[in-house]
Structures are given as C-alpha cells and as structure tokens.
Length: 356
Image 1 (cartoon, rainbow, N blue to C red):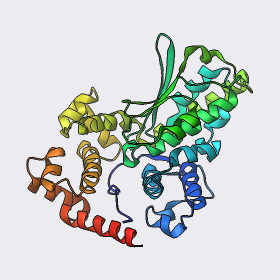
Image 2 (spheres, helix red, strand yellow):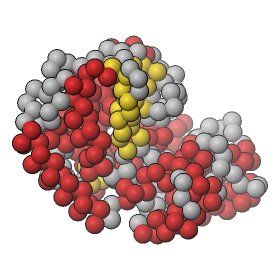
Image 3 (tube, rainbow, N blue to C red):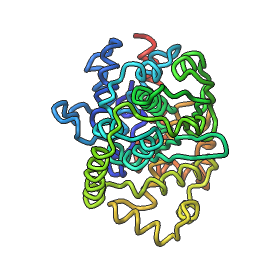
Image 4 (cartoon, one colour):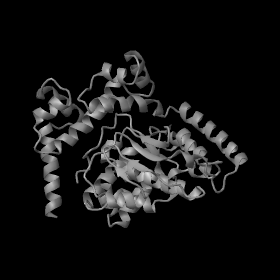
C-alpha cells in the first residue's frame, strides 16, 4: 500500500491521542502477522516512543493502520477483535479514576469530563431521555478509517465499564454513525445487544435504571482527590494549547462536507459562531479556518479518487469546486500531484498488492 494513501498534509492541525492507543493497534497488527516493515509503510513509526505511553501521537496513525487491517481481513470484524483483547491501559489514567467512581453514572460522567485528556479532539456526552440513556462519542477523524477505530474504542470502553459495575450492566442497543456492509453477528455477540449502522451517531444506549448501580471499588474520598488532579491536568492542557476547542468547529465542517458545502461562512454558521470568531479560534491554535476545511476536503478527495468509476469532474463537483480545473490546482497544491497522477499511483499500488 502507498504510504501516503489517505494521509493529510503536515501543515494541518492533527488530532492527537495517547501513544497507548497507537501501540495497542500496532501490537494487534503484529499478532496478526504484519511485520514492522509493513506497518512502517503505512505510518511513521519513528515517532513512536514505546517507553512513554503518555506521549501524544497523531490520531491518523491509528486510522491509517486500522484501515489497512480492515482491507487485509475484509471478512473479519477487526474492531471487535481488538476490543476483545485491548488492555484497559489504552485509556491511560482515566481507568484509575473511573474505578473509584461512586456509581455507574459517575463513571460515565468521568469519561465525559476527561476524555479530551487522552484524545484531544474526542467529544463524549451523556444523554438522558424518558426511559433510556446514551453515552455518545464523536471524533473529527472517525471517517478516516470508516469508523473502525471508533468501534474498537467503544468496545473497549464498554468492556471496561462492565468490569467495574455491580452487577454487570447491559445495553439496549449500540449505534454507529458509519455506513458499511458488515456481518452483524460479531458485533452483537460482543455487545450482547442489537447493533445499528448508519444511525447518525456513535452511542452506547442503556436503560436509565443502571445509572445508580454501584462501582465495585467505589471510594468517594479517593474519587474527589483524583477529580481534583484531573481538573488541574485539564487546565494545564488548555494552557499548552491543545486544540480541543476546535473539535466542534471541525465536526461542523464535516457535517457540511457531507452535503457538499465547504464555504468558510457556512462552516462558522454551522458551529454557531460568527465568521470572525471562527477564524480567530483557528488562528489561536496555529491554523486557519480555510486549512481546517481543506483538511476535510483533501481527505474526501482522496477517498473519491480511490474509486476509478468516479470522474475527476464529478469529484470536483462533490467537493464544491466551480470546475475541475480549480480542483486540479488545489489538489496539486496539497499533494504535489494531479488527481490523475494520484489515482494512477494508487491503482498501481493496488495492482502490485494483488500480484504479490
């Protein structure tokens, strides 16, 4: 596979997560027979620091590798296999804190408040309706690997929550935003609940009555101490300018992109911001509103170009360009290649893989 396939230019703001997530997926890949040389063709493993699991690494590392694994094992639910075996330590210090929560709801809120510490642009929130609740997760790069990383993350998270709750909690259903044809059985066996795809969100849905269930090792005093420590840590991360504040703006850009809208004014409006405020927010984090839009645009362009049946003219239209010429200029500026050159390179790489 081409090492540059699905990647984004280095000048874009890149969501980052703890290195423990990357090493978890790499360990799984190695266990399935991938060599480090093969992995190095997909991601830059020189940036990995195995001695420092608290180091932050681009989320694209995980997305690239998950996409490769899904392509290599198309008949397997790779995300669920990882969810079965991944160590809870991939969530870093959040695991220790949640173990001292007083009840299931407190444990959920712990993840809601602190997930940005381990994945700076992940967004988690707890929803309550008349008879059911839902832990809803979102990430601006979840489309990069067709949702596999999100599926695995939700699987590991639910597995962990079950180990700390007395008695074990059960789900009413699981919802995934991604759209793909898969065999539901491995997913439903893992979650022990119905699983829906193309549901418009990523959510673990449960009955409200489990919110009051106690946590096995709940300790109110210890929980308060850890909450204070993490509050200070969140403050420090904010001071260090991790771009968590961009998450909502990026999601709005992604939502617009799904409808072929890539304008800066539309992006700001979708995020309920004035254009000036949105531009200032991006500038504060070392980027620009246009670069954030171009990041999504480039990724979508590469995904469209991966399909030979879609003409360059159609790709240009889908990406909101007035004509194919404007798209060619933009794509060349981003990648140094014309759309045709990029497509030929990808097709050549795919053909070489098939012949091997």
